Image (cartoon, rainbow, N blue to C red; front, side):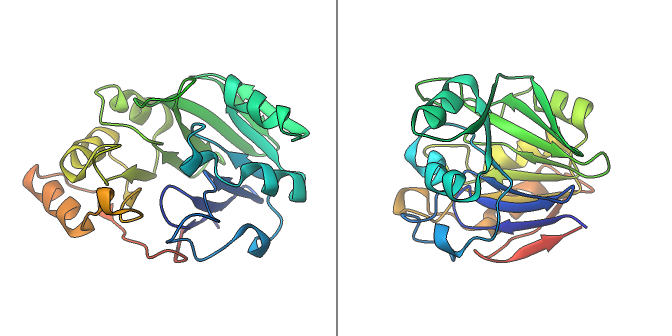
Length: 223
């Protein structure tokens, strides 16, 4: 069984391939997060999409406590290593690492930061989950669909710093997952959004076969 728990903002705890994976664990300063670092059970892997504070978040504290492996682009992994994390894997866009039965692939994202931002695809060979990171929509999302066939996509809808509902609807049409879980909204006033607007935008462009699952922080979607 695969489970996806939203921790608010872009933070997720995902259980897949007998691993517990955190993506962008921004917890302490996240007003929507139902958990703080001390509440977490053992974390095997931490995936960081970029080094902005609301994504790099509490990665160092968590990785040190749980002896987690940090996976990110090379420069971000080096930052974690320089702050004392023992197990870091620094890749780049298009790279894949296999950790036991779990494959992690870094995908493009369009955003500002000190090194390349990325998205990530997690796959156990049966279920593939695409976390888009902070990004706008881009046409090559259909390549992500072609290569990795994600059945679940985690897409930002907040606008301002990332794509909003209209752009995210087109992203869903390009990726064509079975399930879309919106993220990166309502954490701060500047990214206030109603996920119902995202659903409405999907209906406008007549995207079929894509179901929107709106999670509250702390809620879990299971496959």
